[in-house]
Image 1 (spheres, rainbow, N blue to C red):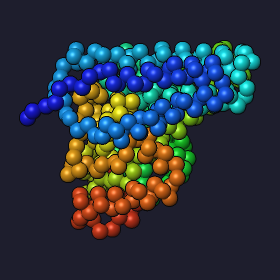
Image 2 (image 1 turned 180 degrees about the vertical axis):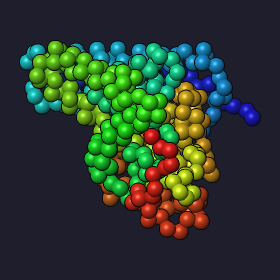
Image 3 (image 1 turned 90 degrees about the horizontal axis):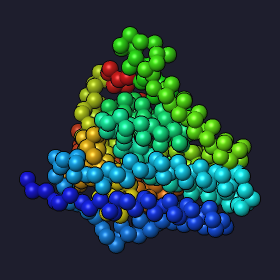
Image 4 (image 1 turned 135 degrees about the vertical axis):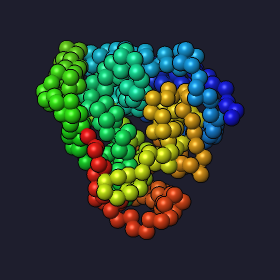
Length: 376
């Protein structure tokens, strides 16, 4: 089978432009903060329309040492993001350079950056085997106070995506706002349950030092302490605000990635294996540059530890296709009637294509099928 050449690393560094844009917003005040979401959401979407789809698949067996410049942007991102956040906290909390509204706008922009880039990079890093990469992933998640995502994603989501056990698999007809409220409650509970059951299988207590929730607590407390030191009480409030915006960005993406897609229940709590058809796929060029190929999500669930430059894309015969990249789809998700009008027909077409034998989807829609057997 022939493969396309390895994609150039430079386009995947689009995210680094967000750092000077945030600096410009902090320096200029006013409405300059809007330049960040305009760049991350709208400019990339326009470029998608211009550049079209990239359906080339590089050799998935390419050696890691050939990916140095691809990986480098994920390795340097935490110090860049942390320095940006702390510097802006100092400006907002220790000087009178910005008004209250200007500070809120600035930290909305920072939340867009730490959510649409920082958490995406954390996701890539946490899937790798090297301790340094995993630690960087943990630090990025701690900087948005969402450390439990590591447990929920690795122990639950990848095993039980598109089943009732997975909190972040959005159900058919479930609007984003209801989904977001549910996930904010169910996600931490699900992660704690998974870790404690994992420890119990080894005969260990939930309070065992191996429980990563100890690390999560220490790292998040350190981030809160740094925010307080940099910007005082004002800085602490702004840090919490950017974390909320980042988590909102993450969960919008989670909502889009699997909306309405269900693995077939085989009876007695057994479900079919994960296949490319259980994730929405998008081959849009520019948004995949910004999001380091996250939109090739069908392949990510097939090979979770495959590094982002090597992720494969699929055609409509194997995976459902999004009509636009994530930035445009997440904006659409914020208006549930428009989202349903655009996506529900696609879900119904997916059901007819892959599961014509299933005539009653009621339990799938409600999430009332049995929990998977042996799930953590």
